[in-house]
Image (cartoon, rainbow, N blue to C red; front, side):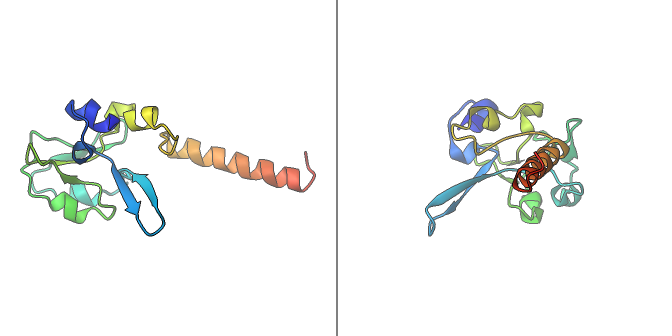
Length: 138
């Protein structure tokens, strides 16, 4: 809801730029967002070059250039580019210009945002900290 409110001024799951995948058999929902691929298929297939990489690294759609052909939606291996039902253009996560509101307002903490290198470094530190304590190194 925070995403659609920030980007559209309305609380609507259909207008959110991130998606929630529901696994009904297990009774869980998992938030997903754009992977901001190094070589974005969505950008490669756009016939009007409406998709680009912003300075902060987000792969973004210029809705003024988009013709709503949905080629990006078909090309995205993660299903993140999707159609805006009111403006007839495609949309996807734009990282809220580098300060994602979904991460700020996620009540459970399931959505976090940070640079991949920082995240990997933190995971390595956590792993080695646990390993060291199990081996009696600390």
